[in-house]
Length: 143
Image (tube, rainbow, N blue to C red; front, side, top):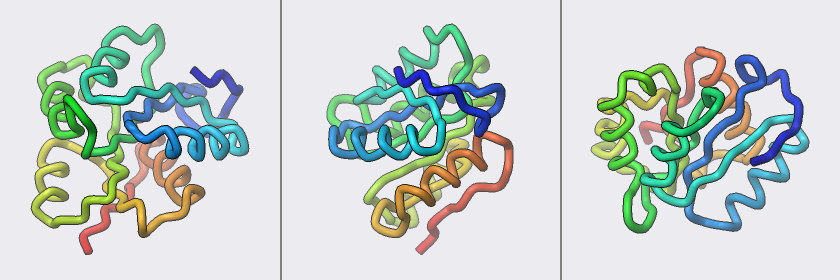
């Protein structure tokens, strides 16, 4: 887990990133360091839900990919929804999938933001995650 001190999320809480692409991890880590954010990474929905349930501190938000091996982002969202202790942790989808039916399914499962990777710079993604973590309205790419 990254351990930078930060004031950009509630009480400096870390953000859980559930993403299977190592290159995306590396880019996010570099930007997190620049912005003073603390990230914890998981590579599947199951690993992500396990990290949420076992965390000593509450995560400020989750940045979630949809398409991953084994257990995908929708599996994660369905599991998270079953656990009342996790309901207040906002989720921002960060994916290449822009199908309106998938976006609707994700919002129906409670996501606060939906970002299509090709439409956002990494700096913009960080800003959206911080907004979401702080209870502000997040972007949803309906196009």
